[in-house]
Image (cartoon, rainbow over all chains, first blue to last red; front, side, top):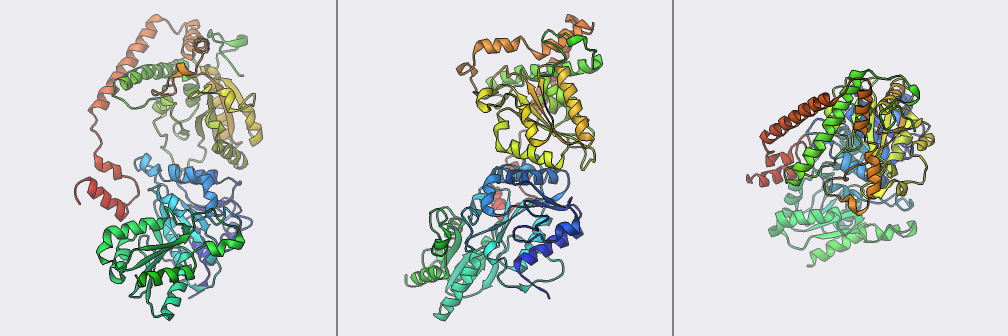
Length: 325
Length: 303
């Protein structure tokens, strides 16, 4: 089985789907000649031509707007926004337009659009670039929001996203793009949405995360294991749809839970997880559910980001506190 | 500003009639239908029988003249909310064709919307890729209470087209013949693969923004009077009268037929069943998420 990093897995999925389905086109800033600022679309324009890998002007709203128009006319667009933080400039097109056409047209115009964007800090990018604003999109209820954390999921979930009959916001973990290779099947496969991945199982506490925060939880679990504490790590994979069942089941068995995310604490998606578990697993809890998130400040300068982002250390400390409660 | 008919309905500079009379009569019928719907719908709204409504009043030539330039078998109409006769003419949305190779898109917006960033982004991209689009800007002087001069210090909004590498033209939006002619030219240009155009139709909103609005708070009555003197419907009627195609009897026939058409539509609408509450959850996704499905069961008392 070939080994790929996340960049290569995404490129593999795009190549595979563009070959299989000629309605699939890629559009965005710098996606063609340059192959994307992270090279995820490297070589695609040479292979599929300028009509299927389209370099657009620097204008996020019209990148999404064009994808909507292309989908209405029968294409299957994969739009790239260079950083999730830049979707602020396209927010109205994503929620109020992309997420409403099927509903507004009473099913006449479903929009099979995928919007790809990397998210998260830890790479010392300037402000705006790393903003983890995934929860903001959850308030637009007709977008699927999916966040792979590893190469296998990146390929399988991207194939699923492109084939999905509805709009999907596909958020990539920027910090993990080139962090090592893993085995990725060369063949066609999909990872269904709404099924969380249990990364590791332990009896003492459940750590819940998505995107690059999964890797933080894995390191925390490793550290806890050395202290004799066995943690379950759940990679949620998708916020919409949400796999409540896996969450509830795990917390019923461990009785403790810490949710970890890169977005600032207040009104982050962690709050949604806590509320869900409080409603569905309250009587199994041995301790209050905790959250480890970034602080409620603007994104700090690069020199301070490691203090701001959730770290394995902060997760471990919070788990210790829960266990001593 | 391009004009074929003066406000009294006379062809300018001895120009020859650009359209055959039957076509103009058809346009007039749509314009009169639109105005009659405005009156009836406003009445229904005041009785609490209809939701918020935006009349077309004053802009009939602009909407009808442009929409009549489209070919319903292959073109796309992308309206906003003040283009009711265009939607009635072609069906909403115009969608009988997918991936039509020589289809053209006509999209409508006001001078207020042209201050939005998305207008710039869309025109800019359309220029770069030579998209077959007609940007039809209805400048009716008002964005609710905000007048044209507060939207832009540009002397002409059509001039903005130069910045996108496309032609821009200002047309008398209350002149059905002129609007139709510039629209046909823009559609033909788009269809020939020569790219987008911007049309600024100078018209005037002769009524409120919508039924919640109160123009007496911000509009000079003298300005409204001046607009009434430029009424687009009277202009076409005067033109057709001059050609021996219009008289009082014909006007009464038109009005009678339109009134019957509207009443029949109201009866039909009243007979239509109210939507079922379960429809709140229809067409959200191809398949509801488990959470949405649970909420649907709760709404329907099934859970």
